Length: 282
Ligand code: NAD
Image 1 (cartoon, rainbow, N blue to C red):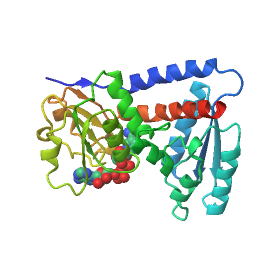
Image 2 (cartoon, rainbow, N blue to C red):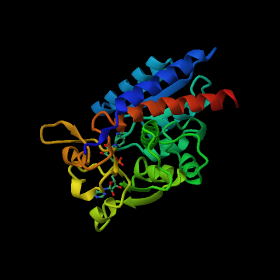
Image 3 (tube, rainbow, N blue to C red):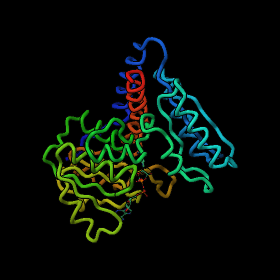
């Protein structure tokens, strides 16, 4: 049996179309997203350009604040405070990583929770833990939407999440838990990873270690979601899962690229729309 391929590009394109249609119905001010980028990190530049292009395609205004490498913490926080007050700005995000001399946590804590479209602020994290959330971190949100798009039931399933980072593993586990899954979180100190992953009905891999998940670590018929983005020896993008062998055992599988990645981008737009509604209904 070869797994059904979960086509993140297609699901993301469909979601984007719906968002664009929704935004086109808004009269007056359009939703606005402020993106802060500091310094000259080439990867950050690519991400910011992608975010701005997505916004433009959906009728969302994006405002870029490109600051020089030597920006001080005070200058950055002052900008965040200004954007907190800006009536045209519904969502604020600071593209990470910031240069080493800047404190990213301090920047995130200074974004008002109502505009925290990355959902990294402790208040957003707390709301997610309580199951009373508005914003959801884009990558786990995208995974949930992919499962939904393929009618993959989470309720009652054993979900194993490999990775416990604040932006992927932990919120992913919470969202699955709120959907009534039984959740196990594995991480770099887990002693027998295979024994855990083999129990998964739904396996979400977010370790950032290529080749980590081989077919013998996957239960027959499992749903395998590969969040990670690594490079193989030829420099091509790949996930944690050894795709060719695991796809023969899984029932559904995401490719890398073209799986979770495109969904992450779209969920930022969705969070911006949520911020817009909150803002205009205040
Ligand atoms: P991270 O480095 O912050 O966290 C990795 C986690 O994996 C850690 O909790 C660690 O304990 C665990 N881990 C590491 N080695 C392991 C091992 N051998 N066995 C079990 N667990 C192990 O990374 P992150 O920010 O959570 O990102 C994870 C991956 O997802 C990266 O490849 C990243 O590029 C990718 N990512 C993709 C998207 C997307 O849109 N597709 C978004 C964010 C991150």
